[in-house]
Length: 443
Figure 1 (cartoon, rainbow, N blue to C red):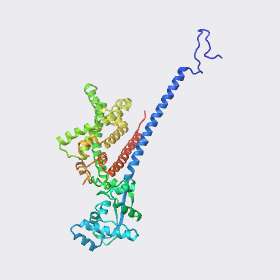
Figure 2: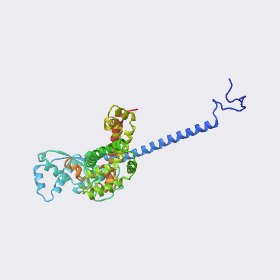
Figure 3: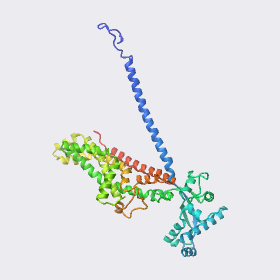
Figure 4: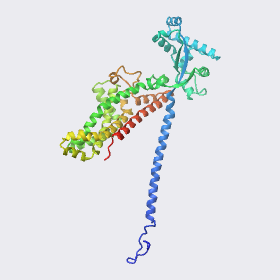
């Protein structure tokens, strides 16, 4: 048996061997290896930046879920309450009582430190008002020892978390260097400590002067009501429009124009929808400004193109044989669509809808134009219907507001809000994946 590269007796030419690797094959193999290397490098670069991103978010945001609290046992007798209520400055009287009992507790533990009511106010805020409000709501707690867990100011919290030190701090109305002696004494006595920051998750914004008491709970409620509006409008309108365009609309220049405009609307910057919402819903229709209803309407306009495109793709993915079989056994066009095509396309429709909602949940630019960033959500709505019409904020808008403030404590809260927002987005994407795998049909 001769090798294929030997000279052929008929032609006198040399043929290429099947076992030997020629130069062209080697060049192609090297190109494939380079392409594989480029792909691996691209994946590695993407994973690296993803790790850097999540590491930055977690390192900056996790401290927001810890707060510094002062746990003090306080007992108010009825004569003390009557005396405090009989004074002109009632809140100051309650603060003085708190200072007296705190000094006594420190002395019993063998700790000596000088402080006054002003120092307590810099460390804990208006303690007297908190105590007075508690006993006004719970008069039966008089003469009983009550443990008050009071949130420390943002600068004291920063002292525990390393943002503030004795070398960098400067005396101000917020904190003085001498106040750190009291903080160290409270720490030595076990009175001040770190605890999980539940008020951050369930609370509301507290204004520009109190980053320690700021919470994102009210903004979460505002985002929820907006998503209810978006889901209630974008899903039926988007699915109905997709079914008509894909199954019933005649193929002519008018429908082609509609399809092109839908694709173009999906690429329009979101702030343009905010301008449209400001002009139509607020200035023309006079709907309440900063209300989740208006925010939901604006986000519905922004989400509709995404839902229509994904729904049409899902309908198109259903094999034509399904339609032909339904029509062949006597079903009408509408019966074929709603009884056969639509159920089979439902996984893709639900997935596209959830992805559209996740996109809307993280939008900030449209909310800038309707006032949801300028409004500070200080509380929860009074009822379900009021949740749509009363002014409120949203998670991305609240994060933007905190990031724009000067205090470092608000910047920390902004990173914590990003973690909560990412958890919502991750949950919605996981639901989309589960629905797609649960109802997906392979052809």
